[in-house]
Image (cartoon, rainbow, N blue to C red):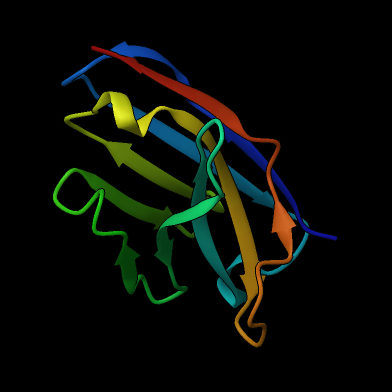
Length: 118
């Protein structure tokens, strides 16, 4: 069973930076695609960023040039570096994983709140 533990949310001002971390437990990390989702109040959950085992990445248009993701296979951890934060980035951020053979994300972290004030 895969378990994900997230760290790093908080309250910042516009223009500040935060780094989220997600530790992966329970299976072979190299066989899983890792994603970051967010859900703002009253909005649907959206995929923000995704990184494959080979570190190929996808970034949503809304975060391109501001968010950077990476993964450390020694620590079984993925990171989301968020720079130039905007109030519209305020949301609960979730780490998720899916096996490379899966089409849907199967495992989810508990979520961490990111609040950006203007």
